[in-house]
Length: 583
Image 1 (cartoon, rainbow, N blue to C red):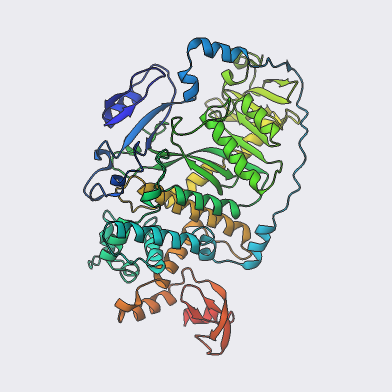
Image 2: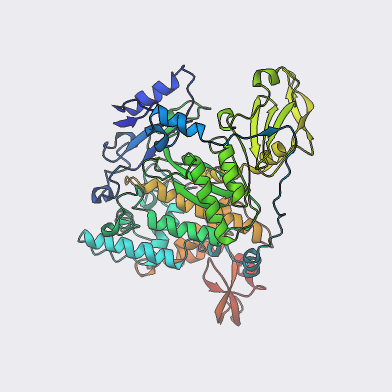
């Protein structure tokens, strides 16, 4: 069963998932629904949620018990919990105390300093010439791997199981999860089957099937005796903190950033696949994300709703998350960052708060959040030619609101970019799709160029996302974190690589192959190890020459060398590298 919230003040009721989806599909009331998202159970810190609910191959996600799975239908314009609890008289009083803004017809005159910051950390990464594995391990570093190993062993010991997990075995598990993003079977056990149509020797030779299943069932990320009961994501909070720290530590220092919502799709056969194409309703965990304009994830926080998240004074939940992201950015220095976001977050109040923090911001905005900015009526603007616009500036804080007529009427707000210079943009017109030029204000152009960072990240994650999931409520979220780390590592590769860059698929294949081959259990392989070494040496996939501190003999010419092939784990000179892999 699922808890469904419709409008403020309505009484929640229990219903079935398909009933919820059908009701939303058939809703003709004109009410704007943003999305369906699944939240962890209210008592997510309870010990029972660690247990598997069943075999994911045999049980459909939509049939999980109500104690494990909760779905919430959230209106697009939902406000903060504090505002909903206020009586009407206090709401009116709250509106009355807001200062009246004075709007003037002129362009904005921002007083921000220009961007002059350099990024010495990226220059340092360029000098190191890190391989894909080295870049991935900037995020899943030795400290994070050891932390997961210790917490998993602790949890198994609490269940009277002597697991004895090692960092080497955990990397094998990670390698299989990454590999499942581009090679997937209906059942994960098919990787180990001896049938010629399904057997995957790279997986089977790396770790035994039963050992993988045992490790995967006890995989854990927090101490159950020290969980915060007020945090719905307490089971994965330590991992979130570690990954946010690593993401921010190695993030490219840039002027432009995007903020938005991402969805971690829930693993179940009755998820968003049943919805019609083009509908905005989706299933999964909603995650607030701050990214660079190219899609590097800098900061993220899973949504817990207004009951579990304290909003910034005067802002709704979305605006409060923007402020938290800005605070995280400013830990690297109070620089004139420029943040872009959509109408879910934008308000004149938010622009004012960010301006006081020394941060630029631009975003589309809903009319009721413009604080009575007297712009031309949208109906009147639609009668004018495309490219027409109207704008006003708040005299006291230099915040501009512009209403622009393109395919539809769009409101956009900024505390840093104005109308000038007005440019031209192409516009397709009529059934013949003839292309015409229309006027475009400067802030609209910059917004369209820089706002898509979160969408680019989502696109990269969706291409080869981890397919192996368990039935614990946080299982899919762990896959999302692995995918996000791989996306970030690949973004750094694109920035730092001096030689030919590899695409995202080749990057993931390299990391998966190195993890499975370098961390394989050699003690139980016997003659298989020689076959594995021979096949991988000549496969022409993911071989990378790296520096090593200890000199070893070259596998080809047998003289001393301080370089090696990271995949083959063999010393080899740069001059011998190509010949070694084709001979």
